[in-house]
Image: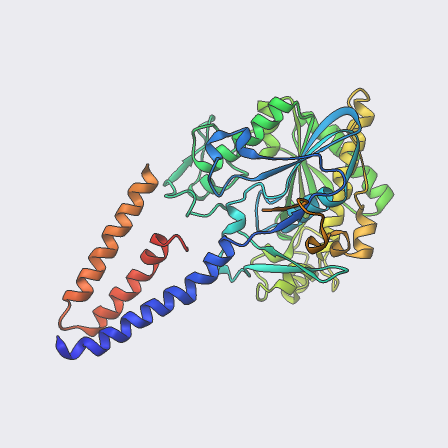
Length: 387
Length: 49
């Protein structure tokens, strides 16, 4: 026993070293704040817990930015980071917050919808913890999150997730997936409280249009599209046709399946008067047969294995040496979102939603995402909200 | 409530592994295994991972 003391001491030192080496970067990532600058159109910043009190004091609570127009009109909700490993949604929301001015109607923006997921990672897949977007004044750093909420905030997972209220059996992991826990409930698991908060926001504020911005694999058939249920499909189709004709990019329409429960594009429409739309931009980083999951790959979407698969016609989107860069993904999300608002306004003239100052596809592809991001160090006092 | 119960279970398993680490007298490979088992338990109790 005595002779083992040096060996045991070494083992304990190794244990502490591994805990610190492996754990500290994760701790810092979880507690790293992302500053967002209130743009010229932001009139109020609330918390989602105002609509779902069960979120108060938890890592799943999130900021809701309100952009109230000069004139009354319709109301829209824009959500990013429902899946926090699809950053084009969060960046699209950020650009709207920092640049958008609402002329008519009111816009609610939640850039970190699954705030807990944005503080999680997927170590087994080699996910980077952060990514930097190059701007005109330097680089702006963001947390790169995971599809699901952190188990530190909602644990344990059940064997099977029984969806509320339909009781459909879903994968156990979907209990932490905020695109399976709609419409949620006030006292359910934490992620159900998140979606319940958004549902309450939509019901109490009388939201007309909800846009949930995602990214999807190039090998997944539901990609590069607008997913819409029956009540939204007309506007989705008009938006799809218009961006194709006027801006030259494809974004086809997929119908929301009525039998697959828990998704925003299904439950929002079924449980409120809001018209839901879910946008999917192709994000090659999420595909499985790729090279290393580097930040460069996340941003430029270029991968030789996907290029090879594209030549064999195994992908559901066009793919060449140019990849699918962040600019294209964010640009098309913004254009389609603005087009949905425009088509809604044309259809419902009494409730117009008119937003200016938000760049469209060509602007973002030409100038880059970073061009539309503000510098937190030069923001006015009180204009920075840390998320 | 169930989350708190799982943290209690985690703490119990960590104490168990640490106790076995202290009591083990013969097999060095078991000591290494106890250390490996303790890593995720410590990370969860610290709420780092």
